[in-house]
Length: 242
Image 1 (cartoon, one colour):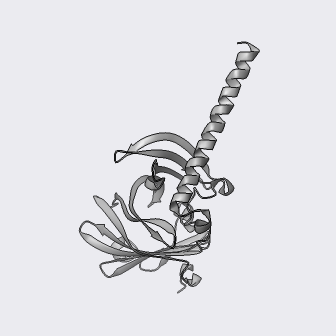
Image 2: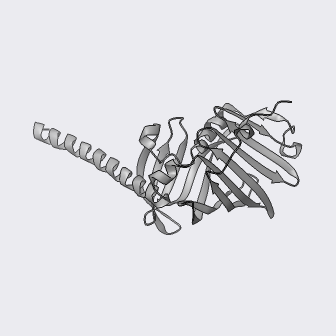
Image 3: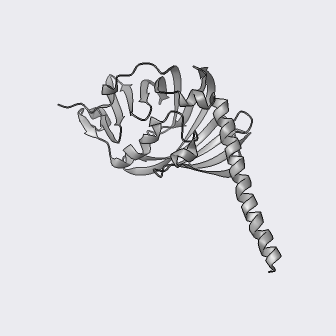
């Protein structure tokens, strides 16, 4: 191969890499704007989400409370029993009733579960300021989701969590994600579909989420209320002592 051809080949590779990087940034920027803009997302300090989960004919209330970068607490009420899962900085704990295989007492979460849950402390999402966060984003290509063209992005956080994001090529909102999760000591890939976007405090949130239930069948989560930057007592993230 002549020096000219070698140079041309090298230049083509560099051009392709730069073009893809530019394309990724364009897609991500449009996604951020579609959600409400960088300033709105950056301004999320606390988030309270009240949901109803429908599974196997049961309607289960859920409440999620997030203080950005600080803590997360999820409360689920099933047949009069309350299950709590919380992240307190780099620590995590849970209370599971006996009917769910627990003791009813606070217990520490496994390290893998804490690691996979810490991304939820950032309600702006891993695509927001992804370079500064050390997140790697790759453009896989365009793929149809429910007969609509979507951009498929492969996202790897600095903690090593892998999530595949599918953004609608017209609205640039998230329509599907496939995430690697740790459930009861096992790594599983969970698919979740998002729809019914509504604006709350200038930010668009999906109000319907559908996924496969760990108990079999399908599970639908409907959002009833979202409060942005409301008061949260950070004591709720701390593991109770006997």
